[in-house]
Amino acid sequence: MSGSGAPSGLKAKHQRLVLLVIALVALIGAGLLAAWALRSQASYFYVPSDMVAKPPAPDRAVRLGGMVEKGSLRTAPDGVTVDFIVEDGKARIPVRFAGITPSLFVEGSGVVAEGKLGADGTFVADNLLAKHDEKYVPREMQDMAKARAAVAETK
Image (cartoon, rainbow, N blue to C red):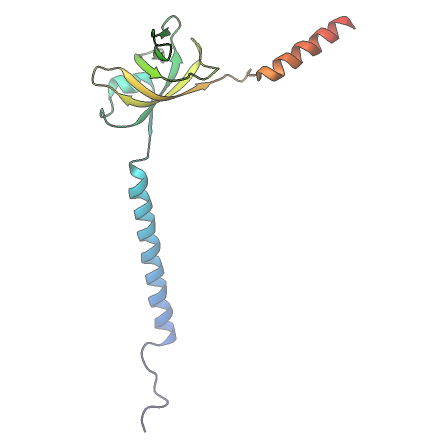
């Protein structure tokens, strides 16, 4: 009798348990690997008062959000570099950006600058995102609205 009826290896219940544990370990490992890979891609958001109170490390990519201070926008002679001040009512941070500014970027408007804080305290932006208020109407729609208003006045 060479054990034709005896079970070999693990029982079915134990096999399922082992597979479940392996799947759980693989899932946790994948989650940890993804979190580790994304940690260097995370970009923290600061307002000027936060940045003054606790400045980020000079090599840390962050976002700075606030209002473009009126009267602070200056364009360099190269025509591409702009310097301005972002403020939140409590603090002011000078910002330098070299590139094409968004069409909605004007003094007194909201802005989010992505970049790094320089050693001299100037925020060097790689990207600018202009924010608009809830009254925003695209240029194409402004022309249509003016035309409708003109037609309504003639009636």
